[in-house]
Length: 566
Ligand SMILES: *[C@@H]1O[C@H](CO)[C@@H](O)[C@H](O)[C@H]1NC(C)=O
Ligand SMILES: *[C@@H]1O[C@H](CO)[C@@H](O)[C@H](O)[C@H]1NC(C)=O
Ligand SMILES: *[C@@H]1O[C@H](CO)[C@@H](O)[C@H](O)[C@H]1NC(C)=O
Ligand SMILES: *[C@@H]1O[C@H](CO)[C@@H](O)[C@H](O)[C@H]1NC(C)=O
Ligand SMILES: *[C@@H]1O[C@H](CO)[C@@H](O)[C@H](O)[C@H]1NC(C)=O
Ligand SMILES: *[C@@H]1O[C@H](CO)[C@@H](O)[C@H](O)[C@H]1NC(C)=O
Ligand SMILES: *[C@@H]1O[C@H](CO)[C@@H](O)[C@H](O)[C@H]1NC(C)=O
Image (cartoon, rainbow, N blue to C red):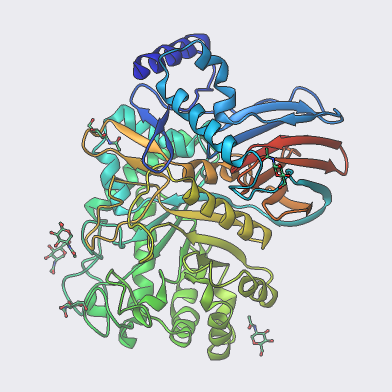
C-alpha cells in the first residue's frame, strides 16, 4: 500500500514537473536510518534554485529525520525567524490525506512518547531552551580558493558500474557529476591496482627485472574499462571538465625489496629511475586515449610498507621521507619536468595527518630542493579524530604556497566500526560533514572521498577489506542503488562551492557548540554558507552579512544546510 501511495505521489510529481530538474528523494527506511532509492526510472535531482532578487536567499537542507536537499526561500531583513520544517513536520498534510500510512502513525506515537518523557526535558536531559547562535559573515576577509571535490574510480567501482543496466548507470554518473547531482569535478584513480580491485596488479609484472619496462607498451583491460567510464563522466559533467588525480599503490613485486605486493618493503635503489619512467609511461598511454591526467602523487600511503605492514595486507610500497626525497628530487621530479607532462601537478605524502609536518621536514633535510617539485600536499583522513588540524596548520606555515587536498576518506575501516555499510546511517554522514568543515576551515583547497560506490557488503576486493561508501549498489538485482546520508553530506559542499570559490570569514558565536559553519564567495559573486547543527533539538541561527544585512532561521535537529545569496 505504501509503495502504491509513493508511486502515485511520485508519478503525479513527475507529471507536474516534467520540464524541471527537481525530483525529490524516494525516501526508504533502513536498519540504520534512511536512504534515497534510485532505479532506472527514478532518481532524485536538484537544480540549483534561482535567486529572485538581490535580497533573497535560499537554503537547501538535509536532516536525520529525512530531509534530503529540500529548499526553503526567504529574504534578508524579515524580522521573523524562518522555520525550516523537518521531514515529518512537512509531511503532516500529506499524511492526513492518507489513512493507510502506518509508518507515519508509528512515528507520531514515538514522538508522543518522546514528548511524554522528554517534554519537560528531564528524561533526555535536553537544554530547557534552544540556544541561539549567530554567524557574522565578512566577505572582505578571504582565505584559500577551492579546486574541487570528488571521489575515487577504483577497480571495484568500475567493475560494479559495468554490471548495472545502462539506464541505471546514467543515474550514477548524473548523481555524482552533473550540476543537478552533486557536481563532483575531481576523480582519483590508481596507476595499476589498489586495495579496491579484484586482484593486485601492476604493469610489466613480466618479464622480471626489466629495467627498461619493455613490456609496458599498452594499458590494461581494466584501464580501458575505466577510460570508457571517464569519457561518460566527462560528457555528463559538461564542458568544465574533470580533474583526474592518479597514484600508484605498488610497483610489480620485482622492483621491491621483499618481492611481494604487500608487507615491509622499499623500492630497490636500482629501480628508482625505472619507477619514475613507469609513471611517465602511464601518463603517455592515458594521453594516447585522450585522457589528460591533472595530477599524480608520490605514491599512496608510503607508511603502509614501513609501519603499517603488520595489519595492512593490501598492495603498498614503503618509503621513508629520506628515500622519497631522493626519489623525488633526483628521479621523478626532473623526469616529469623535462617531459611533455611538465604541467602535471605532483602531490606529496598522500598519507595520514600524523606524518605532517615531519615527513616534509625530513625530506627537506635530505634533499633541500626536493620540496620544490611538490605542487601540493595530499592528506588522508583516517586518524583525524586523534591527530588534530594543527599538524596541517604547521605544515602550511612551512610551505604556504602548496595546494592542500584531502585525497581519501571512508568510514568502516577501524576494528571498532562496522566493516562495510551501515545503510542509511546519519552518524556516518555527520562524520563527513564534520571532517569537511574542519578541513575547509584549515585551508584545504579540496576534498576527495574514497570509493564512489560499493556493493551491499562494502566490497568486493581481493582482501575482503569492506568499508562504507556514499552510494551502495544492489548487486542482487543490479537494478537499484541507494544514496546514503554521506552522499548528501558531501553534496552540501561539492554541489554549491564551485571551483575557484574563495573562503570568506564566518565568525560564529554560540551558547552551545552544536553549530558549525564555513562560508565562501563563488566566482559568480554569490555567497555560500554550509551550516551543520549536531544538536538533537532545533536551533535558531541569526545570520549577519556585512553587505546584505540579517535574517534568522530555525534549523531542525541533526541537520545540514547550504545557504546561498548574492
Ligand atoms: C518540569 O520540571 C520542573 C523543574 O525541573 C518542575 O518544577 C515541574 O514540576 C516539571 N513539570 C512537569 C509537568 O513535570
Ligand atoms: C608481457 O605481459 C603480458 C601480460 O600483460 C604477459 O602475458 C607476457 O608474458 C609478458 N611478456 C614477457 C616477455 O614477459
Ligand atoms: C607475501 O606476503 C604475504 C603476507 O605477508 C605472505 O603471506 C606471502 O607468503 C608472501 N608472498 C611471497 C611470494 O613471499
Ligand atoms: C581525442 O580528442 C580529439 C579532440 O577532442 C578528437 O579529435 C580525437 O578523435 C580524440 N581521439 C581519441 C583517440 O579519442
Ligand atoms: C627547509 O630547510 C630550510 C633550511 O634549513 C628552511 O629554511 C626551510 O624552512 C625548510 N623548509 C621546510 C618545509 O621545512
Ligand atoms: C574473502 O572471502 C571469501 C569468501 O568468504 C573467501 O573465499 C576468501 O578466502 C577471502 N579472502 C581473504 C584474502 O581473506
Ligand atoms: C536488493 O534487491 C533485492 C531483490 O530485489 C531485494 O530483495 C533487497 O532487499 C535489495 N536490497 C536492499 C538493500 O534494499
